[in-house]
Length: 87
Image (cartoon, rainbow, N blue to C red; front, side, top):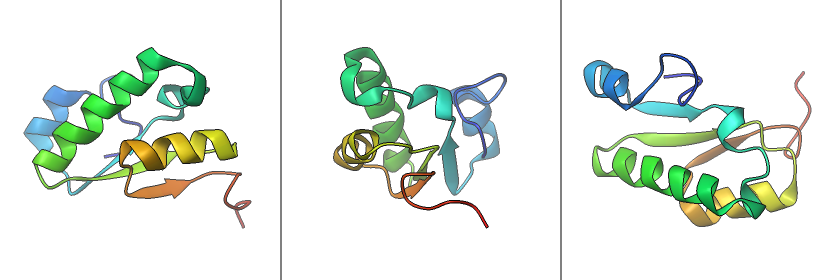
């Protein structure tokens, strides 16, 4: 499931679709390293997903601080300019 947390891609839709992988929308991750509310929100999403056997992709990682924060919160995969430019 792509762009989770934006628009219609919510927990209710995820429960219905039962995806294997959820890709968190960049809007949830911008500045997460310095925003406790975003950290708590992502922690909740990641914990709930892992409880259902769903893997998490952190989309749009642009800084080392965002990467480290999402790694600490338990994201399974990472995507973004910090890790490499798209081809």
